[in-house]
Image (cartoon, rainbow, N blue to C red; front, side, top):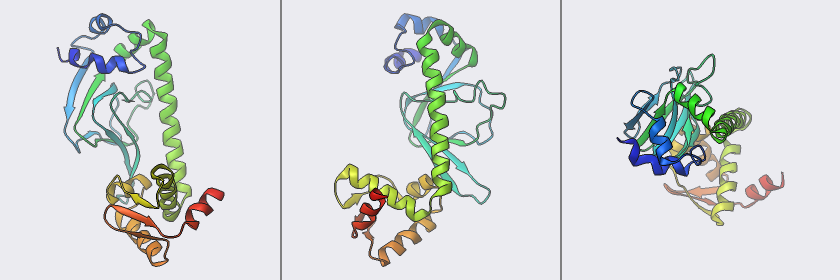
Length: 228
């Protein structure tokens, strides 16, 4: 039974903290769940595909992306081991995924059907609370991300990223932890658009950069952003 291998992962989450190994084994059966492997870059759910399960990430990282009619990709969020997806859709009247779900790394998902989720909610109030908390957080994440993208220019989003990383890394030499393609998707633009804006900022003497690093040459862009 593959589930036995992942019971320690389940019990580390807030959802299952009140369940014993015996409880988990008793509640799961071959008809109410599946554990599936998804290789890196696999599309797990297409945009507009119907949601039929509440999923928990047992291993790996999942990205939530949206693609507009012009083919522009926006990475809305990422979720890692122990996080869940589908809870905000499973019980909705219109339960189609509004965005694409893709495996950023090799991923293993636990797919739980609606009846099993309801059973957990009936048995344990904590599970119900965590489900509601998860749904609320995801609505907030999506709303904040879309508001950020629609109201800010590419340069504003670049500066916001640099400010954040300056505070985290405590240096004007910012080491990138993602490719420029991934960065462009996070702010909802095409990679050439990001590259053009970086090039403009370089010509204006604000920054310098290479493949893996951005050097902030004008600290005023940080100070002005923080002061405002």
